[in-house]
Each structure stands twice: as structure tokens, then as C-alpha cells.
Image 1 (cartoon, rainbow, N blue to C red):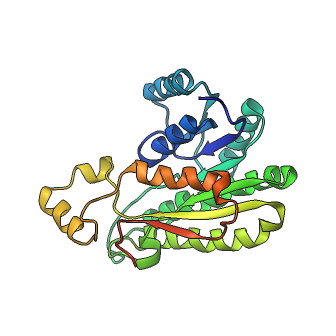
Image 2: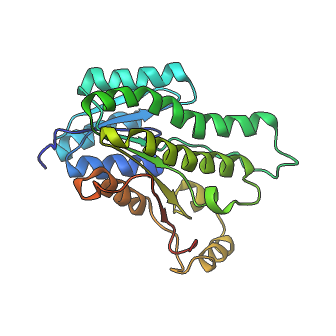
Length: 248
């Protein structure tokens, strides 16, 4: 694969959807910056695998997006190593589910801080770079529960709804600079978290989905790849549901 000469920064990219996005963009020819919060030996292997398989540049950048100072460092290390940032994928996110009457203040705030404030922190530091180069793509990973709500997820749903409002507002602010801002809203996706569910729970979930199955991380990554490409050059301020038809 020949390098496109473009750089993509993906937050929360050590596993799950973020990891799949990194591999999908690298396969397409993007140089990739892999943000992670806590290091594992698997990340070194991931970096080596990507560089050898796709012949692109790859950098590992540690940092907690909930910290503005860490976000500054993530962006600076990416630019220092790879030269620029053409695509930002705000994927980092956590869940701490509970009914509101049982939810602690700390669990509410930590989910908002990582998912929503983290999206602000990294984007705030990337925007000046994209404005200067008069181009860029920002892709925020939201969720269908940011649209529909979900019992037991007031913190998560609020953070993902906030990302949608953030996306639409920023898209209007930076469109004149040729910066496109969109959101992807996954539905039920097969991940490590859903793998531990019982067959009965999985069947109940599938019955809520017109396609009768959960999606895959690759389904999300393919939409991110499209939004990163020239083929999406007239799309901004949009929320694309990838949910098997669950919300219509």
C-alpha cells in the first residue's frame, strides 16, 4: 500500500473500535497516531504489525484525553513525529452504567470528562493546525443512545448527545476553512464488553435490530474511512447511524 501522505490521529485506539479504525485507515495508506491511556506490550506489537503490513508511519502517543494538558501533549507529539494532522477521530470513551438514583457524582463526571470534555480537549488543540493548513476532517464517535437515550446510561447518553451538538456547532464554525466535522453513532457492536453477555441477552438485543444481528468494529471503521476520504467532501455536520436499522 502506497502512503497517502496524510496523518490520522485516533484517540482511545488501543482496542475495540479505535483499534479497528487505526488498522482500516493504515490499510488505506494513512500514517497513524495511536493514542492510548495505559500502555500494554500489545501496543508495541500493533505498531510493528501496522508498519510492516501497510508500509506507513505509526506513532504511539500516551495520554488521558480528559486532561487538557495530556491532550496538548498528544497533539504535539503527533505533529512532532508525523508532521501534521489531517484527520482526527475522537473515539476515546468509557461507560459507568447505573440507574441515576444509584449513580455516584464521580461516575457521572468521569464519563462526561472522558467522552465529552475529552472530545473538546483534543479538538481544541487540533483545530489551529487544520485552520492553518485550510483542510481537515474531524470524526466524532457518538452513539445511538445519544439520540434515543437508554435506561441506566444517563451519563453515557448525555455525553454522546453532547458530542452530537458539539459536532454540528463546530461544523458551522469551520466549514469556510475546508474542515469537515461529522459524527458516527454506533448501535450495538460486538466488542469485548458484549462478548460476556449471555445468549439470552444477546438474543433480546438482536430482536431489537431489524438486521437481527450486532454490528462489528469494522462496520464503524468503514464509515470513518469514507468520512476521511475525498468521496465525502460535501458532507459536514451530519450524524451517521451505524445500527442495523435500530433507529429510523
